[in-house]
Length: 280
Image (cartoon, rainbow, N blue to C red):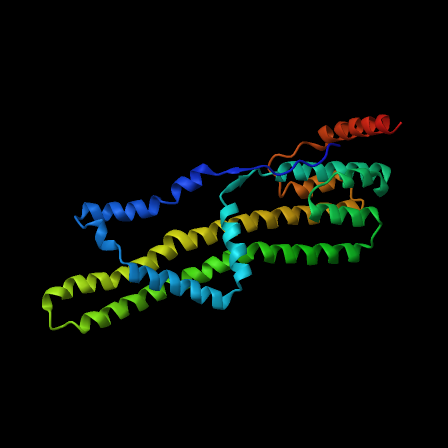
């Protein structure tokens, strides 16, 4: 059996192009209404919203966690080839070999696997680890990895909660300044408009940037969780020497296009013959 391929990453150009779409629609609506775009720019309002949101997030999370969230957000725009079907087929193929030749027969295949979670689970299987110990390891490891994947999304969701509130704070501070200038009625309209720019910044940053990023990160975390669920089911089935046909039926709940077990068996036989010739 060939080594498990690395999951190829490429830039998701379509998603990057969609990012400014929300802002473009809002700005275009302003232009259609005859409102100058310059009226939407106010440095102090941006400082209150962005700086205040960052400060609030730093209180909730450590700089290291925030750095990880920013890094994860950047990686979220790298499209990853979904290998769930190939992974399911690989697990069924390993099940066929283990069922026919015993668990030690898959040791050479385990060494070629690059996924640490899958490799660790199968290594325990080859070492004839007790079922309870194997399930405990897989459960704890999966829970830890799931929590790590969801952490960046929580950071952006927290920021999305703070930003609109900081926008309201900026508007209140702006209105206080306007109230101090009630003696100059001609400046009230412009002053009130500027005060509400902070609210616009808070709402826009939360709903056009922070929440969409959090949603994208949660989607990636859900995909990774589904992949680990598949691994847990497959590894436990291999350890218990479940009939490969039952393994295939179980894993089809995760895979949409998995080869039939009749097609996988000849591949395993060919791979075994090739390995035997290389070792002879």
